Length: 202
Image (cartoon, rainbow, N blue to C red; front, top):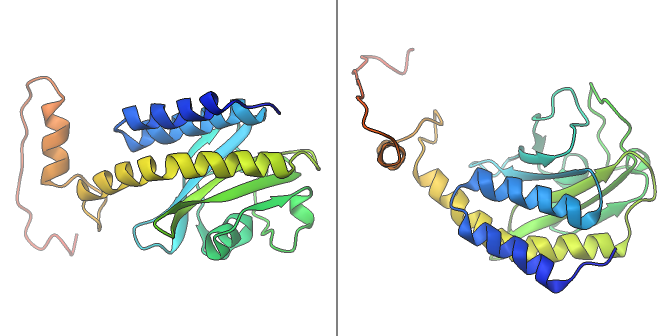
């Protein structure tokens, strides 16, 4: 694996140009897959409660029938990375005592490498790659992921905070700020609003 500094810089610069969190993360996983020379790369971010890891972007086919199932802190390989705030590389993931099997796996998980996304000494998520065969990742793969995570995490956090400021924490629906931002980008349209009594019961 031979990756140039300018290739790493391009990924970070591309994230800086993108304001949408979804666009940032998709670009990151796709470029990381190319740089690592693997098919499967993903990002999971902590939910607003900081209790669960949510799948948010993926390059390559899913390994599970339910690819968006979440992980708790300390649960499985990714949960360990968040809890310990340390990188993890294993050549035989399913033999690792930290591995937590999930129903509906479509292929074997052979090799796995993951690093925490850190901002101001706090972990906001995990950048990871996997391979169906064993012994596919080494120290150079972990180092590359660590560099990418360090370059890209601040851009991801900025976009994540912007998104959180535009949605209602309880429902996930756009709040006034989020709706205004979205409507400013659209062609002229009409919006109908209604007030529902006892909405919490509904």
